[in-house]
Amino acid sequence: MAIDTRGEAAAQPEKPSKAKRTTPALFYRQAVAELRKVIWPTRKELINYTIIVLVFCLIMVGIVSALDFLLTQGVLAVFGS
Image (cartoon, rainbow, N blue to C red; front, side, top):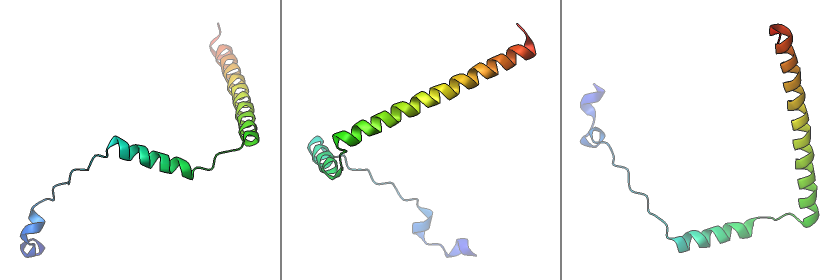
């Protein structure tokens, strides 16, 4: 049987090792190093992206508002007021 052939190590569960905490200074150095890798957008790109997001949000607000209005009218037509 497979149970009989197991060693003692299989019977004892492994204890998880404690994770080491980083110091605030190390965290800061790592954060700065990661931010240096970022490719920041130019001013023109940032303006374009902002306009695109605002237009998208306005379109979504319009769609949700229209659906809300239509569903409200449908519920009022079915159940009356």
